[in-house]
Image (cartoon, rainbow, N blue to C red; front, side):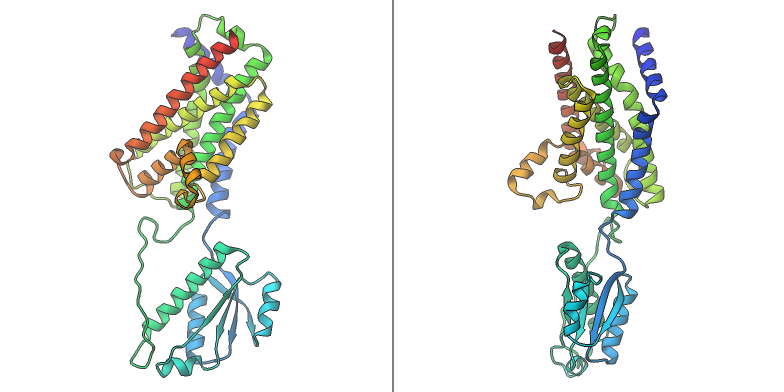
Length: 367
């Protein structure tokens, strides 16, 4: 055990002397959280729109004022004719046009079906759907608030959002960014470290030392486990205090789940390094194997339920899927261990599988 602790201490010193490694370990997570938390967001605010008000009545002006006061829209241009709509869209500046017909106010006050036309730029489909939904809801709220015996009948729909009532993008991105950073950094750093030992010919020297193979593997993993755990804590602190994420669940449970996921990521890194003899190949393999599946198949950005059945099946072998679900359940929903037990068992089984496979591959490599 004394030899093992000395080996772990040596690995810590080796990492702390390497400034590039420290930059990747601690600089990347900070930049990613800030980038995804503030710059990349699915929230739409202050979208440029144009207004074509052929009615110029009190009702059209009040509806326009409601649209602007919502914070979702700002008027880029007031149009005077339908011919200007296409020209304005082609400039690529506006996202939507709201058209009030000539008799809009008259129809509204005389109990007829009063129509408002909303035209959106669907070259960005998700943005167009969101903006038209926002505008429709605001217009509907106006009609219900002033509805009387002379107004057309409208169905009043009451919507309530739970867990994220303000629809903040950080609630979606921070758990995914935390997962992505921990997976990439942990797997990549570990795979490169062991590949460097093999590339320099010092791995064989370690295996003929008094240390056993599992002690060598754990000695390589433990320093990155500790540093990556600090990484995870930093991301949590930034998410809670800087981006406003709640901590509704058990913090200790979340930290233990984070440790488990980091150990899994490190075991994947060891597995990748057991298959490669070059640092460059190990880094490239880590990026390809971890990055794309985590972004596209884990539910980080795209809902798994909307994917084809084949991809939904493949997503079950993506570790990030389970950890993202665990983080959201604990932090946002406040769910306890019983609800995340199955996901935890899956992550633990994956970690044992990869670490066992790695040790076997290293034995085969040396033989």
